[in-house]
Image (cartoon, rainbow over all chains, first blue to last red; front, side, top):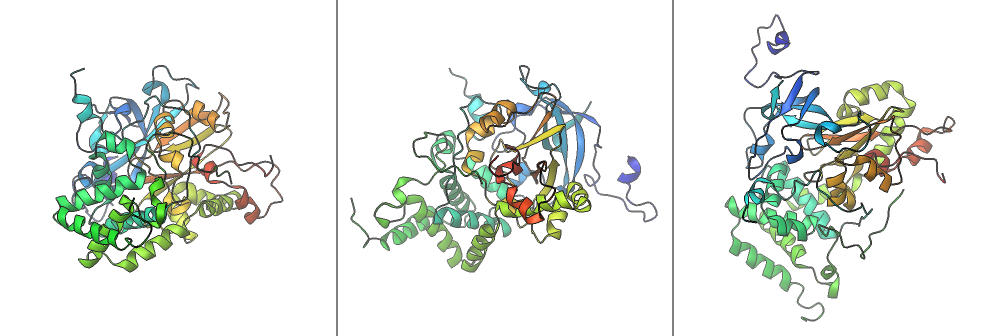
Length: 113
Length: 113
Length: 218
């Protein structure tokens, strides 16, 4: 939805980098495989897993991995509520194939599929 | 086992999906000091002296043995002390002297065994 | 409310209970002393004030599952409030005077005959404190945190909750700025209940999603 990213038509507002969400509900995404040390908020069990964007979380926020080292302000990006099937996360999952996991993931941890 | 990488790359709090025991419905009323510790955490975050994410990071930095053996608010207060030292707000000696002073207020109570 | 008492016989990971040393001889324990020392030093340096701590203790004490129960009961009796609550949990709770002092957002997850929601924080203890108060110890300990995301049906069964295979289970793992509150299903046979009588049925554990709301004595 590029129109939204340009702000309200008629006012000529240009949003700063990161202010407009990169992903929209329904987009298929993969959580990146990455191994930061010291502090992270993407649990190991979800790295590399595929899912879809359920919602864009407002407002945008500072990356909480950086907040962990005292960064309280500065550029912001969005978190997304991501839906992942349990069977995608756990190969031997016991339950209904429709059972799912929901988690907030920071924009820099997601790639479009 | 000579591979130590997992000790660095997987933080001690990152336990989602690991095998564990049956859930026991344990709870307790907070001790007065635990409640004060929680209030202290909130006030430190309000002033961004130690934000919530720094507190989490500080707990993770205690390492798996302390994370496993200290109680919830014990982990918090030790993490606060370490972060305040690192930020140059308190020194280890100042805290040691103050703890001695606090302890001595109670020297008339009970015996020293 | 189902509030099992703390059981000293359980050897559980994390030792999330006060250590026995605290009450012995009426003297504070090591960590109690450390808390007092840190707080007093910060007050002496004028970085925080004693009255801010006292005030925050009052804030914490004022947040209990009774608030969440009022929110749930209101949603059951007022469909327009429910719609606002599901659209934005935080602003709908703020309508009822519940402030979000910890700067979190709130997503309210509605349980239906088709979907059962469960909340957990695998990395620490994220919890909707503004509306439920502080989490119970079991929510912060390893067995629940580790297993709720991998075998939710087995965990629910340990709470006595059996969810049919045709019902979809959604586990929300809170990790960042959003907290979750489960809006449980209103039990049958409560058509004549007042809003307050409905609120009295709603337990903390039902708003975490580990048990349904049941009529008393059921």
